[in-house]
Image 1 (cartoon, rainbow, N blue to C red):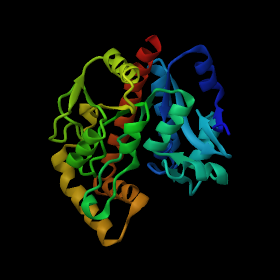
Image 2: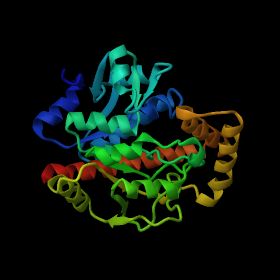
Image 3: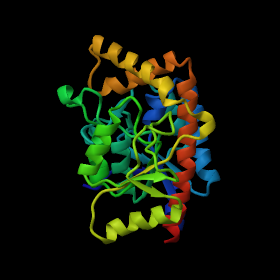
Image 4: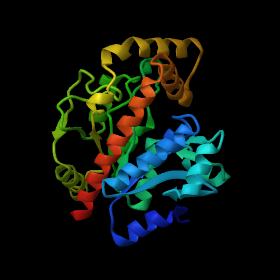
Length: 303
């Protein structure tokens, strides 16, 4: 059986012409933002990729196929569809088999990008080790996907609601390169610095592209994480967020929120506690990551 890939006309043309492609996830559309803001942001992220010289390929599962790029009609339909499944490695195949609509997380988007031959993926922030994971064992599949799937992921670090020191420790154990983009500090999603050092640093997209290709040439499996700090003007300082994150986590524990519901709950509460500021910061960092991913994709195409 061959993977059920269905390419949008725009993405297929870019593939056939050898133009750079950037994969985009779809959970930000279905689980990260309310309608119709989700559609506005999805269009803006795709436009940012195009303006930076690449072609966007938003990934989603629709009508029993992996969509590699969405047409404008597909994007509108997905943004307006209620109760879309949130897909990771564990449930991607089952959802395809069932015919349900599904939105791809970081892990699932990486899998779909690999199947499509797309080497760069832009997202907001990766998942990681949740706080209290020593009791809950709640560790995102994103980390293991980075260790096995050869895709460069451009993100504003890991989500600030996570246990960032343990997330970095797991990435190191799994052999995932964590590269600070023009910074020596590991970014914390809404904040430019987490207080932790970035294990590696690169200042040129060409170097990132060469490192990606050299991993393959050396027979080293997996991808790399390019940690791109949020633009300074959009940042929410870590010291402002810390008590709000602690409050949201305490509320989640009190209400018994668990598994895939934890991250959407926490992000939703922080949105309320910051009076909308976290949403605007989220949009800014995703747009910033999309532009950088397009630059890296362009360098990979030149190589």
